[in-house]
Image 1: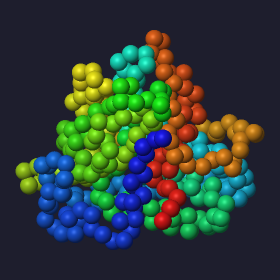
Image 2 (image 1 turned 135 degrees about the vertical axis):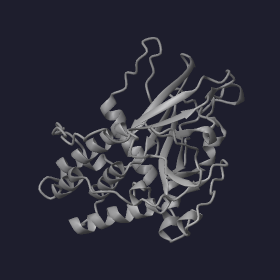
Image 3 (image 1 turned 30 degrees about the vertical axis):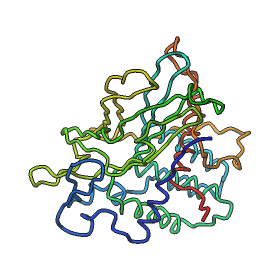
Length: 332
């Protein structure tokens, strides 16, 4: 059994109903909307500060979608390959271990607009009932981005995994993780610091991962107030999204030292958009590409200080899991 919280789907539903989730989105006066800290947040006047509101369709996404009619299998392979590569690009992970049998991996994934585009692309290409033309495909993307932009947040997925799940474990043998999520700061190049304004509550618990992985959504403000000025968290100088936490506690061991995650955000000069043509697998089962309800399990070789995971499969499957977090089937 795993404890996976696809709460972003609930947030998207709320946003689509037109609910003003942040008070500052409805008025001109910035107010403190944080339920986790005393930081004062605001909605920046510059539209580009909201990445979902300002998204531009990736040419590669558009080309892959247009190729679906001539070669649907190749289009699906390309979409999955780019989903995996984008998930890897927008993620960082650290391993915490006390011995060979007690290790957890904590991964943080930024839900960048291009990653969202590849999620929507895979979701539509693998829908047997889909018959969207390019215009309606763009409309589907814009609808998704609009729902995300209504939150006025930078959104991340925190996923905690381990190679040592044991469903039969009881009180004396559980493996717990304490990640002080309310202290997980998002830091810009200008040293603007923000703590979460929303987070899935399970991430604020002593998490027992003995029985499976744990995952949740964390939302950061677009901007914070400093001396009556509304300052964007991810400003023009930010080339790397840095998240740091003072400590992580594994089991009954003393808290670890501070930990950091670094996720590339934007290039200093220009971005290399040259994507090599993937090698397509002739035995690829296009019908097997679906969202995954659980993330892949990492392999672990502590003595060799390496991980023997098949990284292509690992990131493809992690992309399929993030796809499930963002777009899941409705059971209502």
